[in-house]
Structure formats: C-alpha cells, structure tokens
Image (cartoon, rainbow over all chains, first blue to last red; front, side):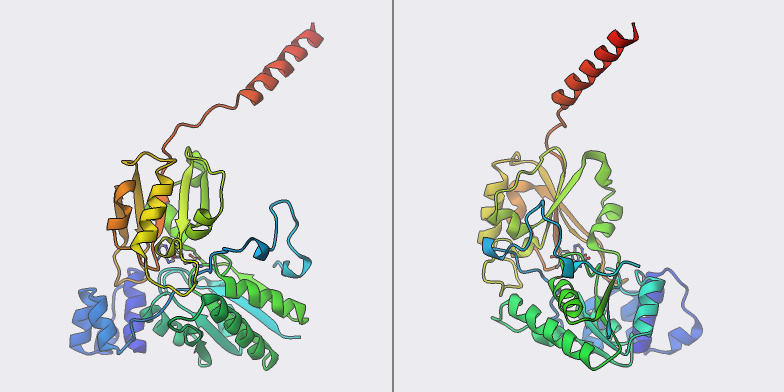
Length: 82
Length: 264
Ligand SMILES: C[S@@+](CC[C@H](N)C(=O)[O-])C[C@H]1O[C@@H](n2cnc3c(N)ncnc32)[C@H](O)[C@@H]1O
C-alpha cells in the first residue's frame, strides 16, 4: 500500500520513477497505475469506495445562524494567528 | 494546555502538501483525519504512525450535524490526552469544514491553543483549472442549499460558485448523493435570474494522479442531466454586463467641479 501511494504521489508531482519504485509493487499493480485505472487500483489495494467528503450541513434554520453580517465574530472563535 | 492544529493537505494527494502542514503533522502526537475519497484516506493513514480516520462517524441515515458533533467530541477527548493533536482535512480546513471550526472553538473554550494551517482548496484549483480570475468580474460563492433556502442579493454580472451542488435542497443532512428533483427545482430557481441557455460548468479537480480533471459545460436548463457527486462544484459565469455606478460618477463630477471653482 505504502509503495503504491508513494508512486501515485511521485507521478502526481511529475517525477520519474526509480527502479526501486518500480520494483516495490507487483507488475500487475504497476500496469494499473500507469493506465491510471483508479477503480482497479482501489480494488487491488482493497480500499472501500464508500468514503464521504466532509460536507457542510446547510443551515436551514434561521435561529441557528451564529453571526449577522455586521457582527464581529465571537471572541472565542478568534484563533491564534501565526 | 494542549495544542490543536487544524491542518489542510490540499485537494491533490501528496502534490498539495505544504511544508508547514508536513511539519505540523510530524510534530503531533496523534493525527485525526478526514479525506475526500478512499485513496486519499489511505494516503492520510500513512502520514503518521498514530493516524486515525474520522470516517466512522458517518453512517447511513445519520445526520451530518450529529456526525460533526461526535467528531468534535472525539477531537476534544484526544486533545485532553495528548500535547499536540493534528486534525487533518483535505483541501483547506477553514473552507466549508464544520468539524474543524467546532473543534477549534471548543478547544479554545477549554483553555487550549488552536491554530489553523491553510491548505489548497477546491476554490484555488478552480481558478487554475478553469482559467478564472475572481478579480476580473468579481466572484460570489455560497453553499448551494443555503443559497436556495435564503433569499440572496447576488450579482449576475459576477461569477457565482455553488458548493455541494449534489446535495442542493437536502434538509435532512443525511444524503450523500444527488436528488435529481431538487437539482431541477434549483435550475428553475436559477432560471428566474439566468437565461435557460446560459452555460454553466460542473467542476471536479483531480484528487490524485489517477483522476482526470472533470469539467462539464452545459446549458443551465440541462444541469439535472449531468452526474453530480460529492466533489462537484457548480460555476456560473457572468450573464450580464457590469453597470456603471452612476452615483459615484456624479459625485466625482461634483467634486471635480468644486475643485475647479476653488482653483479659479
Ligand atoms: C465541505 S466542502 C469541503 C471543501 C474543502 N475544505 C476545500 O477546501 O476545498 C465539500 C465541497 O467542496 C467542493 N469540492 C471538494 N472537492 C472538490 C474537488 N475535487 N473539485 C471541485 N470541488 C470540490 C465541492 O463543492 C464539495 O461538495
């Protein structure tokens, strides 16, 4: 898994794969990676496809609105700035 | 006092990881993470020996509001037991990420330190991939459902970006997939402001080398015929011309006239 992810990362950055990279995964997986076949790669790596993005719950209740446009943010939501 | 680091790792696996994010993750005792897809999640799991996914807080039929409250509690509990905890989110942790905001506010309330480290967001990718400069005509963005639930005074002469378009109109907060009827209702609402034939763009930045950039340009009226996923963002280019501000022009003329009189 780690080796495959490293290869995906490297290819994403446009880097050339070393012989060690190529040898770190099976020929079958290397072929899938080269073909950019995400479905097959996920299957090969035994990854569950049912991952959810963080999706904001849309505010449908006015009483839940925390701030009105002209209000300063609450003090405790102001965070340290580097 | 412990330290909570809310860290963004960008949209494209590996390629968008900033040195600051990398350092923050390495310096943490524990890493809690939320990804955008399973490959991204697998990559995040490798970021730290003590990395734990927040994915288990989602469940079919469970409100995301509940999931995010539980994630927040879990982040806080982890913070109580450690010195430095990184809550790592794909994209930018401050852009449409409720659990990051909730956790930071709660941590500060309990006397901890909370710092946010920005990441490359879908918005950043969009400007690059779709060749849009938000400064050209102006740019407004809303969460799609919020845009539908409330009356907004938006400007059809500027870009309009709508996030979470697949879930538009969902009041249950339990859906993860699109509802074509709601999308159609949304189209009908937009058609009160935009021509039916106005071209809109469904956009998905690539999440890794294995993805293609998705850019579907279609007339507004056909939006419901396009597949919308959790990652889809809708871009509506300007449909009208910017109108000159007569008030400003008149005021400036008056000032210029006054200056002329005084200089005589
Ligand atoms: C809760 S928001 C999280 C945004 C994320 N924090 C960021 O910084 O981009 C989820 C929404 O972001 C947008 N989004 C996420 N991934 C995307 C991608 N790969 N391409 C385009 N938009 C994306 C979609 O509108 C999606 O519904």
